[in-house]
Amino acid sequence: KRLTLTRQFYSTSSYKGAAMKTKTYKIGNHRGNGRIFLEGNLIKSAGFDCGFEYTRVDDVVNGEITLHAGAVCGLSGLHFPVRRVTQSIRNGKARPIIDLSDATISERFAGFSSVEVEFHDGMLIYRGAK
Image (cartoon, rainbow, N blue to C red):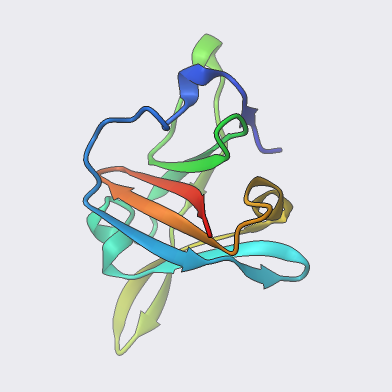
């Protein structure tokens, strides 16, 4: 099960670190669920390389999804599920892929056709964009 946070403590909306880059991605559809597909060197430069672990944290209050490189431990020892960056081979080279596809994508970004992804060192922040 996915842990969803409603406490302001976990919010990234007040995060002051400068983004390395911000890019807009369309929200796709896969088997009736929302889908956001990221690939390539941009996610690798943010610290998400093939096979690396990451943790997804949903912020219901601010309508964001944040991916943290590595495992995250919350308040009171609360642990979040760990996922892995997958890979695909193109022209003999591995390229990292992060594919978010589930019902919460449609819920979290209802009314948005795209998301804006901020690339930080060790963190990706997804926010709704028209």
